[in-house]
Image (cartoon, rainbow, N blue to C red):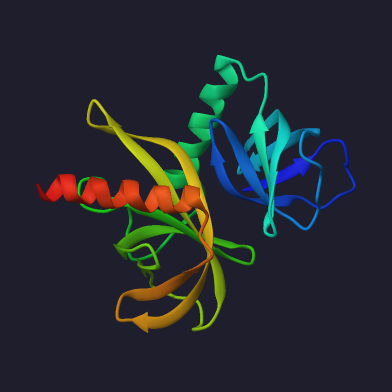
Length: 203
């Protein structure tokens, strides 16, 4: 998922680490001041959304924007983009032809220009195990993105996607294990939500 700054058309697109109805986080070395408003275009596949965002936080990893002036049509477009990102837009890992919502949780991981949608085998506050037919090399740094899901009338609805840097620590028979690197509070919240959902299923 790429994000372009429409006020700086010559700049290369930025990568979004997190995306939700409230805003997004850009992985960038640019440091716009808090309070500045930018015109952004979020691009994924054939989807392109032009949105206004205000800088609300600057960290060593990038810049957080809060969307401003969203109408219901734009909110619906973001929801559709989130669903497509999690369930349809990224390249599906070859080991699973479709996600099984009742027993597995979807996860996205990216390495360079490659983005893969697969499922979690395990998750903890410090790391995760991902299913993969062709895992990246050990010691590779990747990005892992977890969707925050809600079941509405039995249908999983994506509320937001949160991401974190991670390092591949070992290969497994049907996937690989990663250790998270400085996960954000929002990413830890996504882990907590995933663990809560798993506990509810076991109960």
